[in-house]
Length: 123
Ligand SMILES: [Zn+2]
Image (cartoon, rainbow, N blue to C red):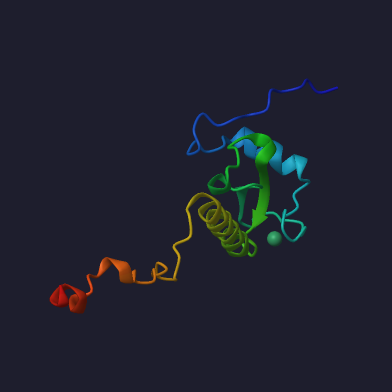
């Protein structure tokens, strides 16, 4: 029985996963791309990606890492940016008040504020 290993967690979001973690993730995922589930062949380029992207509040930890083949990487990056943009738009809508396009409602002019010039002349 293999001894259990404490799961890796990056000190910062920029900390790259060491080779031993890359190997563990590769074995855990059984060499399959997370997006297309294709088996990654020997010598083929692949990257370690975050399931939940860091930009979308994902953690830089071993349980959030997965394999992505080079064919799926641009699509995954585009999907992550689209998700980030969608979340940003929702946050903006909920936090910032929407500027009204209508002008301020005008008040009817009060006639009693104007002195009646004819009455003043007659007096
Ligand atoms: Zn793929």
